[in-house]
Amino acid sequence: MTKLRPAFITLVALSVNNPVAAANYCAGINVKHVRPADWSHLLPFLSQYFRSNDRIDFVGSLQFGEWLIVQAKAPEHPDDPPFIFFRGRPQDSRVVWEWEGVGPDASMAAKKAIPDIPTKLADCFQWAVGNPY
Image 1 (cartoon, rainbow, N blue to C red):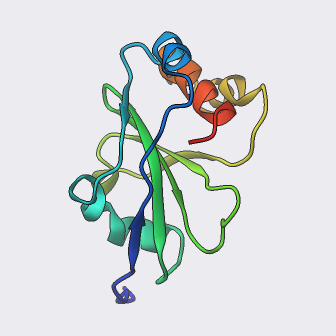
Image 2: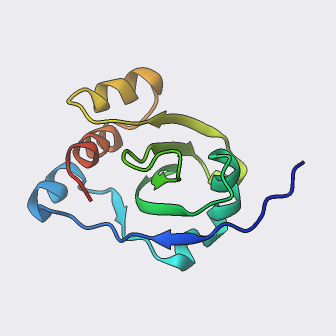
């Protein structure tokens, strides 16, 4: 296994443009503001995932039950940070799916790629895709 150099991490707080809309689409979903203590343990994993020893910016996350969606960007994705889907703890599981881009079909694409994703989480993901952080 290749030893990774420590990456520099910059954190970008998740901000919600319309709290009422977020509450409607994301009721029961843990929409997290990103803090260093929350995500520092993911840095080595995401550095390897992005194949990057450079800075990784955590944009935000959605968590529901055992599901976690992390939006993070690396130099390879400067303008359109992907949403990375995990089922279980990221350190103990593999990436289930990744989404980049915008569009009205994000929820349907998630349900097609991951048939057992909770509908509530897929709907909140659709909201997150359409609303900039």
